[in-house]
Amino acid sequence: MLSDVDIKKALENGAITIEDFDENRLQPATYDVLLGNQFMTFDRHLTEAIDPKKPVDKFMNKIILDKKDDFFVLHPGEFALGVTHDFIGCDDEHCIEIMGKSSLARLGLIIHTTAGFIDPGNSLNITLELFNTNSLPIKLYPGMKIAQVAFYELSSKAAKPYGHKDLNSKYYGSREVQASQMNKNF
Image 1 (cartoon, rainbow, N blue to C red):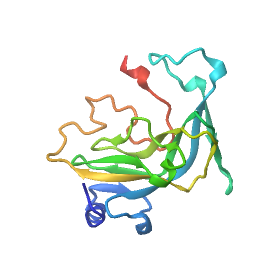
Image 2 (cartoon, one colour):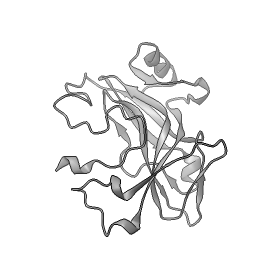
Image 3 (cartoon, rainbow, N blue to C red):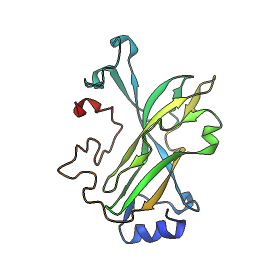
Image 4 (cartoon, rainbow, N blue to C red):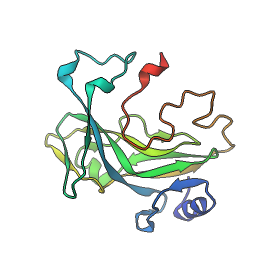
């Protein structure tokens, strides 16, 4: 796992990417990432069930908050997709883990349900799987610290980094919130 010193070195030599790096967000072994302004929610009234074999885009609303004081309310027991403001990536000798912030977890916010790993070779604005476990709604503001990322050096270079022609790299280089593309696995 890279320390703050190693993260800065890796940025300098191009092993990792953090667009608009802000040293004030650098922690001892992680980097705080900000919430972007794009969200996606399911229109429950449009379908009886989610079928992983079929695209889900037509059952989702994309929400873009573009005013300075806009916020997104995540209600109790509700799920939404969000995206990081930060574009983050790594070469084929590093990988990234995204984790929630303790202060937000103490409010009942889960920022990823299972997808907390960014493969070697990928660079993207990370799609977040937001879930409110609290009994009260939670307001989310674009630009707020939403998560933290840790960078790891692999023991050897990946033979087929994410985006390789032999892989089904569905989210490679994504710049906006993306719905599931599980259907492409069938």
